[in-house]
Image 1 (cartoon, rainbow, N blue to C red):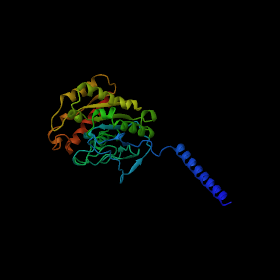
Image 2: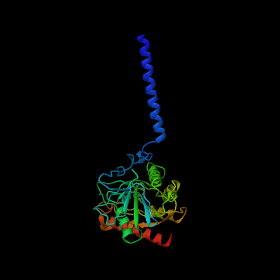
Image 3: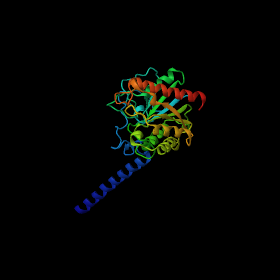
Image 4: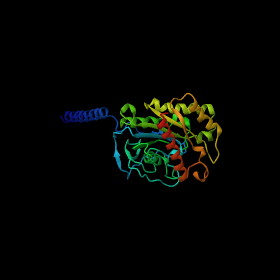
Length: 312
């Protein structure tokens, strides 16, 4: 009798546990993972081979404006990518003056007032928390070019072009576009403003000795990656950018020009960053001073404004 009772009790225990596990599993399958766009080491966040920390994701102390935004036609969405000159690695600081200068955080999909260090991109602590991102947004609004600017920053310092095409950072493009799509910030999901992509890089390909033809093809594929992820009606502004320790590299800049000249329908000539010399650079001759960050922002604003005005 005792044995039968124990067996019955054991059976009841397993039945309850099984029912709970099945119910829990059904809940998981029904609701899906809590965040399908998480960036993980080796698949979107830098590996040990890339000389930079992970993207800055800490939104503590920042005011969340909205997670879903009804953006008017006078809004610009600007995705900044590639290397450290467009991440938070400039000296000094910059405080926005325009209430509609915003920062889209690819880590949580939130839209915050633009504050340095910028959310979504890397923060190079040794060089400074400043970034051209917020100043680009402010300047475009101050000039009357747009009434609202949203900066979506994904750059990681020390990265090669190939890292964004077939390497560890390719997933950052996927995640950024999925996040933007989920918030209605792409053309296919109802966004009626304009979209620009500002890649700033070439320094690490300079150091790596990437051949001209290889780099030109890579840049075209870099631009194509955004199209492949569903972005449309955008322009990818390829910079003239190669300076390391105050020295430029003709192979890199020729590759950048080649990418714009042929084989890339979305590519357009971007800012001539190599023109920023002297006081625009920090002591390492590579990263930007506060003046250099402002100068880079001004170059990007000119490129965007000209393209908008002539529908390039």
